Length: 430
Image 1 (spheres, helix red, strand yellow):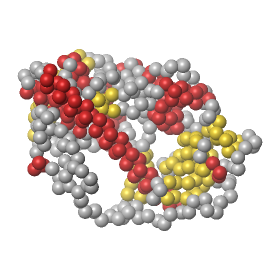
Image 2 (cartoon, one colour; image 1 turned 90 degrees about the vertical axis):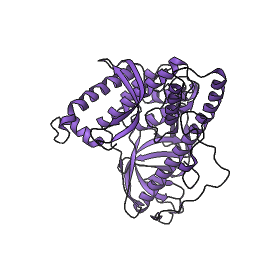
Image 3 (cartoon, helix red, strand yellow; image 1 turned 180 degrees about the vertical axis):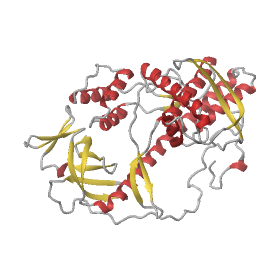
Image 4 (cartoon, helix red, strand yellow; image 1 turned 60 degrees about the vertical axis):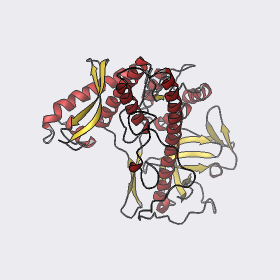
Protein backbone atom coordinates (compact mmCIF):
# COMPACT_ATOMS: atom_id res chain seq x y z
CA UNK A 1 0.00 0.00 0.00
CA UNK A 2 2.52 2.60 -1.14
CA UNK A 3 1.25 6.18 -0.78
CA UNK A 4 0.12 8.19 -3.81
CA UNK A 5 -0.17 5.10 -6.01
CA UNK A 6 -3.42 4.00 -7.68
CA UNK A 7 -4.53 0.51 -6.65
CA UNK A 8 -7.54 -1.56 -7.67
CA UNK A 9 -9.61 -2.58 -4.67
CA UNK A 10 -12.94 -3.79 -3.35
CA UNK A 11 -14.69 -1.36 -1.02
CA UNK A 12 -17.13 -1.89 1.82
CA UNK A 13 -18.41 1.65 2.38
CA UNK A 14 -20.08 1.32 5.76
CA UNK A 15 -22.16 4.06 7.39
CA UNK A 16 -22.36 3.85 11.20
CA UNK A 17 -24.18 5.96 13.76
CA UNK A 18 -22.55 7.52 16.82
CA UNK A 19 -22.90 4.28 18.79
CA UNK A 20 -21.31 2.10 16.11
CA UNK A 21 -24.55 0.62 14.77
CA UNK A 22 -24.53 -0.09 11.02
CA UNK A 23 -26.96 2.10 9.07
CA UNK A 24 -26.23 0.88 5.54
CA UNK A 25 -23.37 -0.46 3.45
CA UNK A 26 -22.33 -0.05 -0.17
CA UNK A 27 -19.97 -2.62 -1.68
CA UNK A 28 -18.25 -1.85 -4.96
CA UNK A 29 -15.08 -2.01 -7.05
CA UNK A 30 -12.89 1.08 -6.99
CA UNK A 31 -9.48 2.61 -7.51
CA UNK A 32 -7.91 3.87 -4.30
CA UNK A 33 -4.91 6.06 -3.53
CA UNK A 34 -3.40 5.74 -0.08
CA UNK A 35 -2.36 8.94 1.73
CA UNK A 36 0.35 7.24 3.79
CA UNK A 37 1.94 3.91 4.54
CA UNK A 38 1.77 3.51 8.31
CA UNK A 39 2.94 0.93 10.82
CA UNK A 40 0.98 -0.19 13.87
CA UNK A 41 3.62 1.41 16.09
CA UNK A 42 3.33 4.75 14.28
CA UNK A 43 -0.45 4.82 14.58
CA UNK A 44 -0.41 3.78 18.25
CA UNK A 45 2.07 6.57 19.00
CA UNK A 46 -0.03 9.11 17.10
CA UNK A 47 -3.14 8.09 19.06
CA UNK A 48 -1.25 8.59 22.33
CA UNK A 49 0.36 11.86 21.23
CA UNK A 50 -1.88 13.91 18.94
CA UNK A 51 0.95 16.35 18.21
CA UNK A 52 3.00 13.61 16.50
CA UNK A 53 4.98 15.46 13.85
CA UNK A 54 5.06 13.32 10.72
CA UNK A 55 1.44 12.14 11.09
CA UNK A 56 0.01 15.45 12.30
CA UNK A 57 -2.31 15.91 9.29
CA UNK A 58 -3.71 12.39 9.68
CA UNK A 59 -4.29 12.47 13.44
CA UNK A 60 -7.93 13.71 13.31
CA UNK A 61 -8.95 10.86 10.99
CA UNK A 62 -7.02 8.32 13.07
CA UNK A 63 -8.62 9.57 16.29
CA UNK A 64 -12.09 9.37 14.75
CA UNK A 65 -11.43 5.81 13.59
CA UNK A 66 -10.10 4.96 17.06
CA UNK A 67 -13.20 6.30 18.83
CA UNK A 68 -15.40 4.45 16.38
CA UNK A 69 -13.48 1.20 16.95
CA UNK A 70 -14.03 1.53 20.71
CA UNK A 71 -17.78 1.91 20.11
CA UNK A 72 -17.73 -1.20 17.92
CA UNK A 73 -15.88 -3.13 20.63
CA UNK A 74 -18.38 -2.06 23.28
CA UNK A 75 -21.36 -2.96 21.10
CA UNK A 76 -19.86 -6.34 20.23
CA UNK A 77 -19.24 -7.18 23.88
CA UNK A 78 -22.75 -6.14 24.87
CA UNK A 79 -24.26 -8.59 22.42
CA UNK A 80 -22.10 -11.41 23.85
CA UNK A 81 -18.99 -11.60 21.68
CA UNK A 82 -16.15 -13.54 23.34
CA UNK A 83 -12.75 -11.82 23.48
CA UNK A 84 -9.81 -14.20 23.69
CA UNK A 85 -7.04 -11.64 24.16
CA UNK A 86 -4.29 -14.19 24.78
CA UNK A 87 -0.65 -13.09 24.54
CA UNK A 88 1.21 -14.66 21.64
CA UNK A 89 4.89 -15.51 21.45
CA UNK A 90 7.11 -13.85 18.88
CA UNK A 91 10.25 -15.82 18.01
CA UNK A 92 13.19 -13.61 17.07
CA UNK A 93 15.84 -15.31 14.94
CA UNK A 94 19.48 -14.33 14.67
CA UNK A 95 21.24 -14.08 11.32
CA UNK A 96 22.55 -17.65 11.67
CA UNK A 97 19.01 -19.02 12.10
CA UNK A 98 19.24 -19.64 15.85
CA UNK A 99 16.74 -18.16 18.30
CA UNK A 100 17.98 -14.96 19.91
CA UNK A 101 14.88 -14.42 22.07
CA UNK A 102 11.20 -15.22 22.49
CA UNK A 103 9.07 -12.24 23.45
CA UNK A 104 5.44 -11.30 23.78
CA UNK A 105 4.02 -10.24 20.43
CA UNK A 106 3.05 -6.56 20.69
CA UNK A 107 -0.64 -5.66 20.56
CA UNK A 108 -1.71 -2.05 20.86
CA UNK A 109 -4.66 0.24 20.08
CA UNK A 110 -3.72 0.32 16.39
CA UNK A 111 -4.10 -3.47 16.16
CA UNK A 112 -7.50 -3.27 17.88
CA UNK A 113 -8.62 -0.43 15.60
CA UNK A 114 -7.89 -2.39 12.43
CA UNK A 115 -9.39 -5.57 13.89
CA UNK A 116 -12.71 -3.91 14.75
CA UNK A 117 -13.07 -2.24 11.36
CA UNK A 118 -12.31 -5.53 9.61
CA UNK A 119 -14.91 -7.35 11.72
CA UNK A 120 -17.48 -4.67 10.87
CA UNK A 121 -16.73 -4.95 7.14
CA UNK A 122 -16.88 -8.75 7.20
CA UNK A 123 -20.28 -8.68 8.90
CA UNK A 124 -21.62 -6.08 6.47
CA UNK A 125 -20.62 -8.13 3.42
CA UNK A 126 -22.10 -11.27 5.01
CA UNK A 127 -25.40 -9.41 5.50
CA UNK A 128 -25.29 -8.41 1.82
CA UNK A 129 -25.17 -12.06 0.72
CA UNK A 130 -27.62 -13.26 3.36
CA UNK A 131 -30.26 -10.62 2.61
CA UNK A 132 -30.24 -11.53 -1.10
CA UNK A 133 -30.05 -15.29 -0.61
CA UNK A 134 -26.84 -15.46 -2.66
CA UNK A 135 -24.50 -18.47 -2.43
CA UNK A 136 -21.22 -17.69 -0.66
CA UNK A 137 -18.63 -19.07 1.76
CA UNK A 138 -19.52 -18.13 5.33
CA UNK A 139 -17.23 -18.25 8.35
CA UNK A 140 -19.26 -20.22 10.90
CA UNK A 141 -18.74 -21.12 14.56
CA UNK A 142 -21.12 -23.62 16.14
CA UNK A 143 -22.31 -23.77 19.75
CA UNK A 144 -19.77 -25.34 22.17
CA UNK A 145 -19.93 -29.01 23.00
CA UNK A 146 -22.13 -29.23 26.12
CA UNK A 147 -20.00 -31.84 27.90
CA UNK A 148 -16.75 -29.96 27.30
CA UNK A 149 -18.34 -26.67 28.35
CA UNK A 150 -19.71 -28.21 31.55
CA UNK A 151 -16.27 -29.65 32.33
CA UNK A 152 -14.78 -26.18 31.87
CA UNK A 153 -17.50 -24.58 34.03
CA UNK A 154 -16.78 -27.12 36.76
CA UNK A 155 -13.06 -26.29 36.62
CA UNK A 156 -13.82 -22.55 36.76
CA UNK A 157 -15.95 -23.11 39.88
CA UNK A 158 -13.04 -24.85 41.63
CA UNK A 159 -11.13 -21.58 41.14
CA UNK A 160 -13.95 -19.52 42.62
CA UNK A 161 -15.61 -18.35 39.40
CA UNK A 162 -19.34 -18.91 39.06
CA UNK A 163 -20.99 -19.86 35.78
CA UNK A 164 -24.64 -20.77 35.14
CA UNK A 165 -25.50 -24.36 34.25
CA UNK A 166 -25.69 -23.52 30.54
CA UNK A 167 -23.49 -20.44 30.09
CA UNK A 168 -24.13 -18.12 27.17
CA UNK A 169 -21.43 -16.36 25.16
CA UNK A 170 -22.01 -13.26 27.31
CA UNK A 171 -21.48 -15.32 30.51
CA UNK A 172 -18.21 -16.70 29.15
CA UNK A 173 -17.00 -13.25 28.11
CA UNK A 174 -17.76 -11.89 31.58
CA UNK A 175 -15.65 -14.68 33.07
CA UNK A 176 -12.75 -13.81 30.75
CA UNK A 177 -12.86 -10.22 32.00
CA UNK A 178 -12.84 -11.45 35.62
CA UNK A 179 -9.74 -13.49 34.83
CA UNK A 180 -7.72 -10.52 33.54
CA UNK A 181 -4.48 -10.14 35.47
CA UNK A 182 -4.91 -13.34 37.51
CA UNK A 183 -2.46 -16.28 37.48
CA UNK A 184 -5.13 -18.56 35.99
CA UNK A 185 -5.90 -16.21 33.08
CA UNK A 186 -3.94 -17.82 30.27
CA UNK A 187 -4.60 -21.40 31.38
CA UNK A 188 -8.37 -20.98 31.74
CA UNK A 189 -8.52 -18.98 28.48
CA UNK A 190 -6.78 -21.85 26.71
CA UNK A 191 -9.04 -24.46 28.33
CA UNK A 192 -12.14 -22.51 27.29
CA UNK A 193 -10.80 -22.39 23.74
CA UNK A 194 -10.50 -26.18 23.76
CA UNK A 195 -14.13 -26.45 24.89
CA UNK A 196 -15.21 -24.43 21.86
CA UNK A 197 -16.00 -25.79 18.45
CA UNK A 198 -13.48 -24.86 15.77
CA UNK A 199 -14.55 -22.11 13.40
CA UNK A 200 -14.74 -23.24 9.79
CA UNK A 201 -15.92 -22.30 6.33
CA UNK A 202 -19.29 -23.39 4.97
CA UNK A 203 -21.87 -22.39 2.35
CA UNK A 204 -24.53 -22.95 5.06
CA UNK A 205 -24.89 -20.06 7.48
CA UNK A 206 -25.42 -21.05 11.11
CA UNK A 207 -23.95 -17.87 12.60
CA UNK A 208 -20.77 -17.28 14.58
CA UNK A 209 -21.06 -18.15 18.28
CA UNK A 210 -17.76 -16.60 19.36
CA UNK A 211 -18.57 -13.24 17.76
CA UNK A 212 -22.28 -13.49 18.65
CA UNK A 213 -22.92 -12.62 14.99
CA UNK A 214 -25.92 -14.05 13.12
CA UNK A 215 -24.00 -13.90 9.86
CA UNK A 216 -20.28 -13.57 9.18
CA UNK A 217 -17.68 -14.23 6.48
CA UNK A 218 -14.13 -13.30 5.51
CA UNK A 219 -13.83 -10.43 3.02
CA UNK A 220 -10.94 -8.20 4.08
CA UNK A 221 -7.82 -10.30 3.33
CA UNK A 222 -7.96 -11.77 -0.20
CA UNK A 223 -4.16 -11.73 -0.54
CA UNK A 224 -3.58 -14.19 2.30
CA UNK A 225 -6.90 -16.11 2.59
CA UNK A 226 -8.54 -17.95 -0.28
CA UNK A 227 -12.14 -17.73 1.09
CA UNK A 228 -11.88 -13.92 0.96
CA UNK A 229 -10.87 -14.14 -2.69
CA UNK A 230 -13.84 -16.41 -3.39
CA UNK A 231 -16.17 -13.85 -1.79
CA UNK A 232 -14.73 -11.14 -4.06
CA UNK A 233 -15.28 -13.33 -7.12
CA UNK A 234 -18.84 -14.13 -6.08
CA UNK A 235 -19.58 -10.42 -5.66
CA UNK A 236 -18.22 -9.69 -9.14
CA UNK A 237 -20.25 -12.52 -10.62
CA UNK A 238 -23.37 -11.13 -8.93
CA UNK A 239 -22.74 -7.72 -10.47
CA UNK A 240 -22.01 -9.32 -13.86
CA UNK A 241 -25.53 -10.83 -13.69
CA UNK A 242 -26.91 -7.33 -13.27
CA UNK A 243 -27.58 -7.89 -9.58
CA UNK A 244 -29.86 -10.84 -10.27
CA UNK A 245 -29.67 -14.11 -8.30
CA UNK A 246 -28.31 -17.16 -10.14
CA UNK A 247 -30.73 -19.43 -11.98
CA UNK A 248 -31.73 -22.55 -10.05
CA UNK A 249 -29.65 -24.79 -12.31
CA UNK A 250 -26.61 -22.56 -11.70
CA UNK A 251 -27.31 -22.30 -7.98
CA UNK A 252 -27.12 -26.05 -7.41
CA UNK A 253 -23.79 -26.23 -9.23
CA UNK A 254 -22.40 -23.20 -7.37
CA UNK A 255 -23.44 -24.52 -3.96
CA UNK A 256 -21.84 -27.90 -4.64
CA UNK A 257 -18.64 -26.19 -5.77
CA UNK A 258 -18.59 -23.86 -2.75
CA UNK A 259 -19.13 -26.77 -0.36
CA UNK A 260 -15.97 -28.38 -1.72
CA UNK A 261 -14.01 -25.12 -1.55
CA UNK A 262 -15.15 -24.51 2.04
CA UNK A 263 -14.19 -28.02 3.15
CA UNK A 264 -10.77 -27.76 1.49
CA UNK A 265 -10.07 -24.33 3.02
CA UNK A 266 -11.13 -25.50 6.50
CA UNK A 267 -8.88 -28.55 6.19
CA UNK A 268 -5.88 -26.52 4.99
CA UNK A 269 -6.41 -23.97 7.75
CA UNK A 270 -6.21 -26.70 10.40
CA UNK A 271 -3.09 -28.13 8.74
CA UNK A 272 -1.45 -24.69 8.65
CA UNK A 273 -2.25 -24.11 12.33
CA UNK A 274 -0.64 -27.44 13.24
CA UNK A 275 2.48 -26.57 11.26
CA UNK A 276 2.64 -23.19 12.99
CA UNK A 277 2.38 -24.83 16.43
CA UNK A 278 5.05 -27.39 15.51
CA UNK A 279 7.44 -24.69 14.28
CA UNK A 280 6.93 -22.61 17.43
CA UNK A 281 7.56 -25.70 19.60
CA UNK A 282 10.69 -26.55 17.57
CA UNK A 283 12.20 -23.10 18.05
CA UNK A 284 11.18 -22.99 21.72
CA UNK A 285 13.06 -26.26 22.36
CA UNK A 286 16.04 -24.96 20.39
CA UNK A 287 16.02 -21.78 22.49
CA UNK A 288 16.12 -23.78 25.75
CA UNK A 289 18.95 -26.13 24.72
CA UNK A 290 21.64 -24.02 26.37
CA UNK A 291 19.53 -23.47 29.49
CA UNK A 292 19.61 -27.02 30.89
CA UNK A 293 19.56 -27.00 34.73
CA UNK A 294 18.53 -23.35 34.86
CA UNK A 295 15.62 -22.57 37.19
CA UNK A 296 12.49 -20.52 36.47
CA UNK A 297 9.22 -19.53 38.06
CA UNK A 298 6.43 -21.42 36.28
CA UNK A 299 2.63 -21.37 36.17
CA UNK A 300 0.73 -24.63 35.65
CA UNK A 301 -1.14 -24.28 32.35
CA UNK A 302 -2.49 -27.83 32.00
CA UNK A 303 -2.98 -31.01 34.04
CA UNK A 304 -3.06 -34.57 32.65
CA UNK A 305 -2.35 -38.06 33.94
CA UNK A 306 1.07 -37.84 32.28
CA UNK A 307 2.12 -34.72 34.17
CA UNK A 308 1.92 -30.93 34.37
CA UNK A 309 2.21 -28.47 31.51
CA UNK A 310 3.92 -25.34 32.78
CA UNK A 311 4.55 -21.95 31.25
CA UNK A 312 7.84 -20.23 31.96
CA UNK A 313 6.66 -16.64 31.83
CA UNK A 314 10.18 -15.21 31.97
CA UNK A 315 11.17 -16.82 28.67
CA UNK A 316 7.65 -17.25 27.23
CA UNK A 317 7.85 -21.00 26.55
CA UNK A 318 5.91 -24.03 27.79
CA UNK A 319 7.30 -27.35 28.98
CA UNK A 320 6.09 -30.46 30.79
CA UNK A 321 6.89 -32.01 34.16
CA UNK A 322 6.43 -35.80 33.79
CA UNK A 323 4.27 -37.30 36.54
CA UNK A 324 7.14 -39.47 37.81
CA UNK A 325 9.14 -36.31 38.57
CA UNK A 326 6.46 -35.23 41.06
CA UNK A 327 6.52 -38.40 43.16
CA UNK A 328 6.20 -42.17 43.15
CA UNK A 329 2.40 -42.22 43.39
CA UNK A 330 0.58 -39.55 41.41
CA UNK A 331 -3.16 -39.57 40.79
CA UNK A 332 -5.36 -37.30 38.69
CA UNK A 333 -8.41 -35.88 40.47
CA UNK A 334 -10.65 -35.42 37.43
CA UNK A 335 -13.36 -33.58 39.35
CA UNK A 336 -11.03 -30.90 40.71
CA UNK A 337 -8.61 -31.17 37.77
CA UNK A 338 -5.56 -31.57 40.03
CA UNK A 339 -2.65 -33.99 40.27
CA UNK A 340 -2.31 -35.40 43.79
CA UNK A 341 1.06 -36.70 44.99
CA UNK A 342 0.49 -39.83 47.10
CA UNK A 343 -0.53 -39.18 50.71
CA UNK A 344 1.67 -36.12 51.02
CA UNK A 345 -1.22 -33.68 50.81
CA UNK A 346 0.55 -31.96 47.92
CA UNK A 347 -1.43 -31.36 44.74
CA UNK A 348 -1.04 -29.24 41.62
CA UNK A 349 -3.70 -27.54 39.52
CA UNK A 350 -4.11 -24.98 36.76
CA UNK A 351 -2.86 -21.55 37.83
CA UNK A 352 -0.56 -22.85 40.59
CA UNK A 353 2.98 -21.50 40.63
CA UNK A 354 6.13 -23.47 41.32
CA UNK A 355 9.87 -23.30 40.82
CA UNK A 356 11.09 -25.58 38.04
CA UNK A 357 14.35 -26.67 36.47
CA UNK A 358 14.92 -27.30 32.75
CA UNK A 359 15.76 -31.01 32.53
CA UNK A 360 15.96 -31.49 28.75
CA UNK A 361 15.19 -29.77 25.46
CA UNK A 362 14.70 -31.73 22.25
CA UNK A 363 13.94 -29.69 19.11
CA UNK A 364 13.47 -32.80 16.97
CA UNK A 365 10.66 -34.02 19.22
CA UNK A 366 9.62 -30.40 19.84
CA UNK A 367 9.67 -31.06 23.57
CA UNK A 368 10.89 -29.23 26.68
CA UNK A 369 11.08 -31.42 29.80
CA UNK A 370 10.95 -29.78 33.23
CA UNK A 371 11.36 -30.98 36.80
CA UNK A 372 10.57 -29.40 40.17
CA UNK A 373 13.58 -27.35 41.22
CA UNK A 374 13.72 -29.24 44.52
CA UNK A 375 13.71 -32.68 42.88
CA UNK A 376 17.02 -34.54 42.53
CA UNK A 377 18.32 -34.91 39.01
CA UNK A 378 17.24 -38.25 37.54
CA UNK A 379 19.71 -39.99 35.28
CA UNK A 380 18.26 -40.90 31.91
CA UNK A 381 15.16 -38.76 32.34
CA UNK A 382 15.36 -37.76 28.71
CA UNK A 383 18.68 -37.45 26.96
CA UNK A 384 19.39 -34.00 25.73
CA UNK A 385 19.40 -33.91 21.95
CA UNK A 386 22.41 -32.70 20.05
CA UNK A 387 22.26 -28.98 19.47
CA UNK A 388 20.21 -28.27 16.37
CA UNK A 389 21.12 -25.32 14.22
CA UNK A 390 18.93 -24.69 11.19
CA UNK A 391 20.50 -24.19 7.81
CA UNK A 392 20.16 -20.67 6.51
CA UNK A 393 20.62 -21.81 2.91
CA UNK A 394 17.50 -21.40 0.82
CA UNK A 395 16.10 -24.84 -0.10
CA UNK A 396 15.57 -25.72 -3.73
CA UNK A 397 11.98 -25.57 -4.87
CA UNK A 398 10.61 -28.97 -5.82
CA UNK A 399 7.30 -30.21 -7.08
CA UNK A 400 5.18 -31.79 -4.32
CA UNK A 401 4.83 -35.59 -4.45
CA UNK A 402 1.58 -37.38 -5.20
CA UNK A 403 -1.25 -36.58 -7.56
CA UNK A 404 -1.93 -33.11 -8.87
CA UNK A 405 -3.85 -30.90 -6.51
CA UNK A 406 -7.34 -29.80 -7.51
CA UNK A 407 -7.61 -26.36 -9.02
CA UNK A 408 -8.31 -23.87 -6.24
CA UNK A 409 -11.13 -22.13 -8.13
CA UNK A 410 -11.74 -19.52 -10.79
CA UNK A 411 -9.32 -16.89 -11.91
CA UNK A 412 -11.95 -14.43 -13.05
CA UNK A 413 -15.56 -13.60 -12.27
CA UNK A 414 -17.18 -17.03 -12.20
CA UNK A 415 -16.47 -19.66 -9.55
CA UNK A 416 -16.45 -22.19 -12.38
CA UNK A 417 -13.79 -20.43 -14.48
CA UNK A 418 -10.41 -21.97 -15.32
CA UNK A 419 -7.31 -20.51 -13.63
CA UNK A 420 -4.71 -18.82 -15.80
CA UNK A 421 -1.98 -21.45 -16.25
CA UNK A 422 0.59 -18.77 -17.01
CA UNK A 423 0.37 -17.45 -13.45
CA UNK A 424 1.06 -20.76 -11.73
CA UNK A 425 4.22 -21.07 -9.74
CA UNK A 426 6.83 -23.48 -11.03
CA UNK A 427 6.09 -26.00 -8.30
CA UNK A 428 2.51 -26.42 -9.52
CA UNK A 429 0.89 -24.28 -6.84
CA UNK A 430 -0.65 -20.86 -7.27
